[in-house]
Length: 61
Image 1 (cartoon, rainbow, N blue to C red):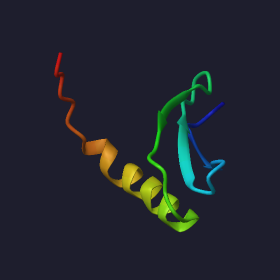
Image 2: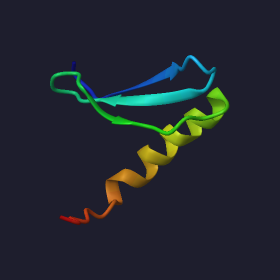
Image 3: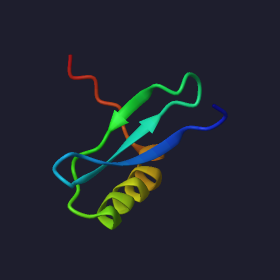
Image 4: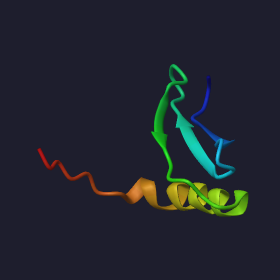
């Protein structure tokens, strides 16, 4: 897999969510909350793309 990938999925209760897969081995590295519409799910993906690059890492251990 050359690039990380967002996958939109529909759950058994008709809600949408996304998985973010790594570019290396394709494993799921993040799963979103459930969204009531596909558009809301796409908005969630856009928020991750926009905000994640500047996110602070907080080690709470």
